[in-house]
Image 1: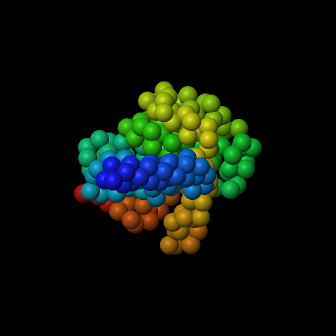
Image 2 (image 1 turned 135 degrees about the horizontal axis):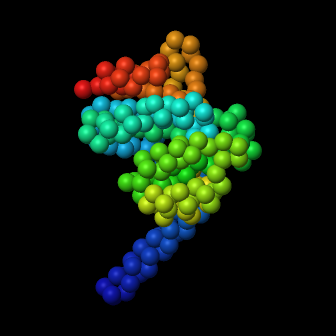
Image 3 (image 1 turned 45 degrees about the vertical axis):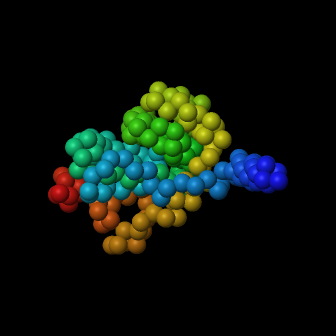
Length: 207
């Protein structure tokens, strides 16, 4: 009798697991669980950057601030929180929804190979995307090149595209103008009016 009850219990557990697996596997992309940001580094001070990969001003921001931010990550001084968004105008301008696809791809890389995230982020911006931007195949190839081979299916499926679109509505607003756009910089939670000087905007506000 004991053996029968044990067998029935095992069957019940296996059935429950099967239902759970089916439920998870059938979860639509829009319900993907994602963090509020993609965090890199373990420093006490925080730097948050909100950006759209198709945004020309964001490309300039990365050129000006990227090297300083990377040095601060490497030195253990900051935690960088990346917030990719798809601004509706820019997303439409590419004709290929590149803003949402590229932002989603960054989340895929962060999930598949966290150590490759910063390299993927930097290399994608270094391409200065314009026109139609990169195809999903190009994004997957770049992910593979930076060490995130496992991100390819996620990129092809567009797992995080809906989240990147939704994040545009979460952009912090400028206290002076009440407007919102990209790039947006926060240091230790404080909105920073970007001046073009990493020294004034970041270095003098940490430590």
